[in-house]
Length: 296
Image 1 (cartoon, rainbow, N blue to C red):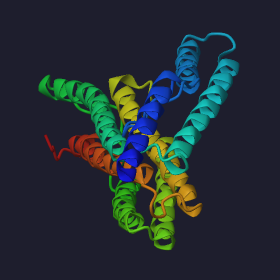
Image 2 (tube, helix red, strand yellow):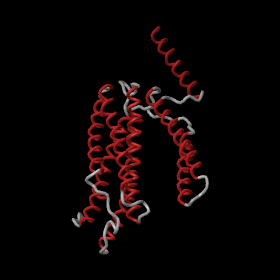
Image 3 (cartoon, rainbow, N blue to C red):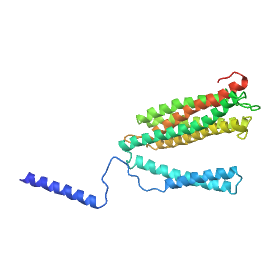
Image 4 (cartoon, rainbow, N blue to C red):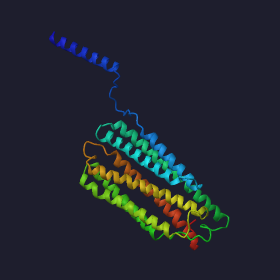
């Protein structure tokens, strides 16, 4: 009888607790992350829109272009930083990134990389349409008197740098997967250094080039294609540097997940693969045509 009364008492408490929680506005715990309202997405969008407007104004010789660009950049950087800090707090300290959330984040980032790949497809399409169109019409690619960039100098060195950094970032991923903080620091730092070296040689290559972005369709396509890749290298370098800082502050130690590190590795490998395509078709192919040893 005493046991029966105890069970009835527990059941009544459970029902009262469910009734009070359902009528007090509390949401039961699930495996999904119900995101709180945030001002950062709309502010980031406003910053990007104003930067695009500043670029259009600059092209057409508008007024207050630099002031607008600086304000837009400050808004974009500060809002994006605050947004990322909220995500880091949710992942590291609040435990919001459950296994279900992690699976959704992987799918979302994979789709993001796919969209970035098609972004490059558009610029490669313009490059090949112009180049093959010139060659099929009996003209040169690059058109005379443009002298293409020598591929076996800085571009080849940058290729070696990115391939080496790809091996280093894989090493760092293996180390962080077993929560080895000390071993992760060295290869991750080398990857950041490799990104800085790549950008430094890219800028030097632009300064030494015999043509500019205004030199016809060749100059426009070349600088847009290589500049787009360079902007992705810059973003990847900042991404890896942020992961280095997070690793320094023990964010990836057990039992915390390392989703940010995983996405940084994916992104850097994506940058590596894109560069191999850029190196072959934006550097070697025009140079082979220019010296008479045609690649295509």
